[in-house]
Amino acid sequence: MAEVTEADWAGLRAAATEVMSRAYAPYSNFKVGAAGLVDDGRVVVGCNVENAAYGVALCAECGMVSALHAGGGGRLVAVVCVDQHGNTLMACGRCRQLLWENGGPGLLVETVSGIKPMTEVLPDAFGPDDLVSRA
Image 1 (cartoon, rainbow, N blue to C red):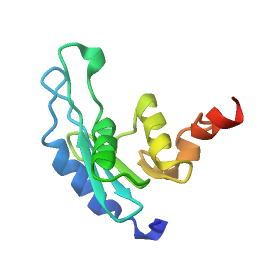
Image 2 (image 1 turned 90 degrees about the horizontal axis):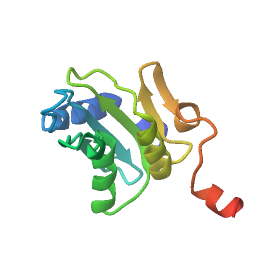
Image 3 (image 1 turned 120 degrees about the vertical axis):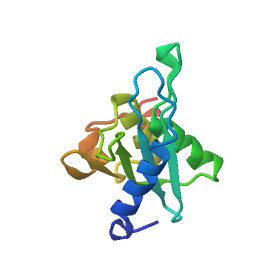
Image 4 (image 1 turned 45 degrees about the vertical axis):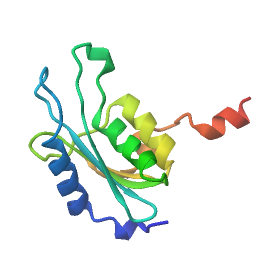
């Protein structure tokens, strides 16, 4: 697994900013990009994709997680999400759950108030272990 110190936060932000430019956001004009470091050293990216039926729009983190699995899987160890200006953007609630599922409690996320583990980004999270322990 990649060490925390190996995360190139500036590189992740640059990758997120680059993919953000390819977002499909004709309705909100709010483009978002996400980039994540995988435990095998790969970087996966995703951008938001809107839809005329607003409820089926895809967040950038959804695209990033799809790229994670399409590229062979693994676990996310560091994630950055940016707005159309390249500024750090906080993941929505749905995406925080998605990040927890694919990175776990130790996943580091760049937030608007600094780099934090998922245990701080989504406290008391429900995850795969709960399906076993609470069955």
